[in-house]
Image (cartoon, rainbow, N blue to C red; front, side, top):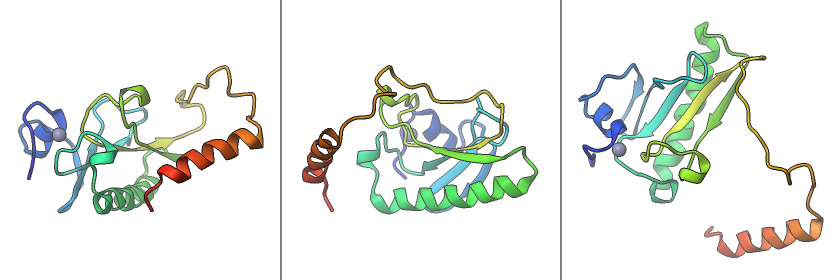
Length: 145
Ligand SMILES: [Zn+2]
């Protein structure tokens, strides 16, 4: 296992820091977020240290999503207050990533929980089809299928 001592998640994975573990297999581990948005907020992390999504092998990424999907079902069945679920992955500081070891949040949600997204001033002005097509073209060119 490739882990690093200056990463809090690697320290958790190595058992040198406490965590409330929910699930572990050969590729990923799930444990409770210590600063939960709501009770039941779980993080799914790859067992090997990977800082960013682009460095994560696709099989591990797909597996993390599979586990998150199962955790979402478990949270709904668990008795934890849960009317909905958000899956959230912050990739990069600008996207609010704070721990630079990839992690997928599984967040139980309920009406009035106070969590939300804020939008910039441009958000209410929908772009034209021409602009959407131009951006789609840029992404198509860059896409590695
Ligand atoms: Zn790490």
